Image (cartoon, rainbow, N blue to C red; front, side, top):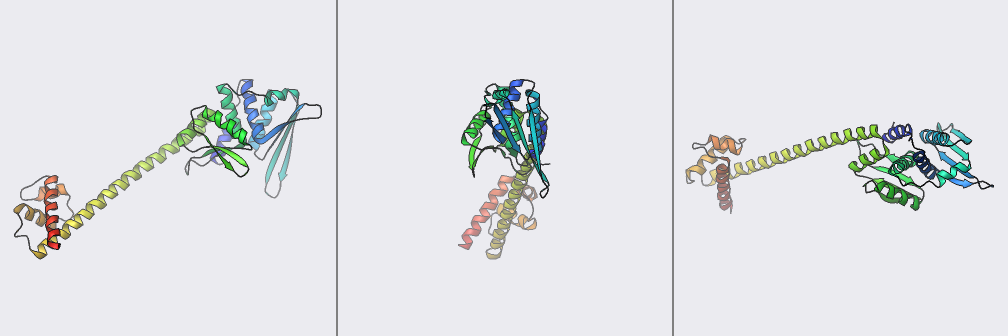
Length: 292
C-alpha cells in the first residue's frame, strides 16, 4: 500500500465526537468528490462519486452516524480493470446542515482538512520526496482550503493543473505539521523516522565528501611538493639550500605520504606543522623561480 493509502486508511478510522466536526468533514468530502443539488420539491440532495473504497466507506458512515435519512450506494465494477466505482446518494432537509456548514472552530478545520485529504489528497513516498497535495475542482475551493491550511501557520500554495487547482506543501516539516493537524499520528511517526534517517545519511555523506575533498587537496599538495623538490634537486641540487630547507626536502623525498605534522617530527630538528608548511612554501617559490 502506498504512503497515501496508509494515511487515508488511518484517517478513515477516526470519527469526531462532536457533531459539528462530523458535519465539517462530510462537507469537505462532498465538495471534493461530489456535490449538492435540489430535487423538484426543493429538498437537499447529495451525490458523491469515488473509485476509492475508503472514501466511500467514510462518507457512508458519516452520513449514517450523523443523519437518520435514507442513503443508497451503487457499486459499478469494471471487470476489465478489476476496479470498482461507488456512487452514494442521500436526500433530506437535514443535509442543509452540511450544505451550510460553517467551518470556523479549530477542531472543525482539522476535520475539514482531514475530509478533503481523504477525498482528493495524496502524498508522495517520503523516501523519495516530500510532497503533499489536495486537488480541487475550482479556484474558489482551492483558495478556501489554502486559507484553512495556512491558519495553522503553514505556507500552502496553489498551482493550476489542467482543469483543476492543487493546494500543496513541499517542506518536510510542514507536511509533518499537516499530518498532525489531520491527526494522522501513525503516519506522522513513520514520516519522522524517514526524515531522521535521511538527515543522518545526508550528514554522513557531507562528512565523507568533506573528508574526501580534504584528502584530495592534501594529496595534490603533496604531489606538487614532490615535483618542486625533485625539480630543485635535478637542476641546482640541495647543497646551496639553507639547512632547514634541505632537511625538509630530503625528508619529504624519503616520506612522500607523511602528513605535515609527521614530517615535522622526522626532521633533524623537529618543528611544528606551520614550520614545515612555511619551509615547503619556500621550496615551492624557489622551484617557480628556477622554472621561470
